[in-house]
Image 1 (tube, rainbow, N blue to C red):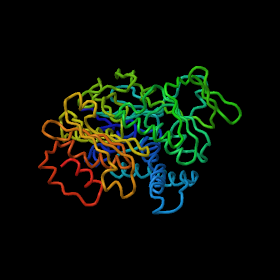
Image 2: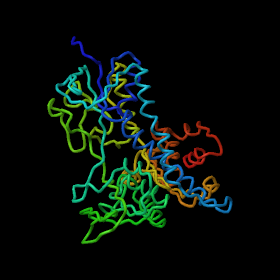
Image 3: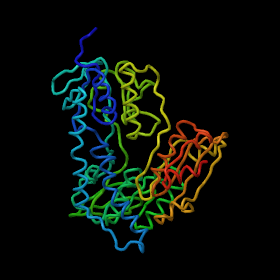
Image 4: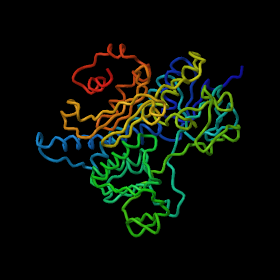
Length: 443
């Protein structure tokens, strides 16, 4: 048997790695992790964790707005103080995660990794060998290939703004665009969203997406559909977005939120013959690439499942079980929920209303402000669609509301485990709560 430096060597230190690497090292495997940036990857440092920290005062602002009369006064967001709060919460995370890894026995190697053969990764001229290698290098922001693209900023730049620009142009209409448009407008910016096509958030139930766009428009956000952005130009301290048929819009700052692309370049993948596509690295049902001892995990994987932190965590834990010998079974993905942290939220899991209707499933629609529990904080918007199969198993749910993410989390056991109505009645929820209100729609 070859004497390798590591049993398992990971490229990247995000959720596609550390959620599985920690228990793998603790189980006695020799684990190495190569990372050129911040330990923890995108989500803790410049993604989910940072984003939700910026969103908290927006949700609070909305609640106070609805409750005027019961409470008095307006809440205004202090942007520099909010960024300072985000930094205080987020900046300790890389050291915290690194501590979890090293305490478990994993070795951190700081630098850029380059595959030189199927068992060797070189960092700054130093070779490290491993029996198994896991590529978990994630995604990075896309930048439009147009004149003036250097004037566009990405999500990391937005979350580091010491002062909020007065006028912001956002290119794209996916998660990042819609969430940051919500935050920026709530904090006082004039926001224009330039949509690539006619639809936003294409993976979500479109009637709910259109409700969200209408609500955001009512708050003053401008949406330009089928914008066809063609160039960015700079004049003094302002920028112009060129779009459409000789149309233009002058702003103070541009966010290029046109998607994210896989980190697969300059890693030596072609040297060892690993197959790639524009969507990432294809894998089989054991997360193996076409090179048998090299695996991939997290957002860098070319897959049908949503590229979200929970997916990466699930894959990372699966690889822990596979590479520690706890299982040799293929990965079996459960229903994976997803949320857009706008105000109100969009959230969904399982079979969509569109696919449910096509399959002949029963669709139950609920206008949520009719429920007394939603009235306690004066919620006036909110709808959901519950999808049931012929045996009344809940197989999907989609919601737009101020608590949509909590509702979908609450419903996960019913969707994932296929609970029947008798089993649903065995779940006795705390009352009053959003869980009790939600499950009351099922029973």
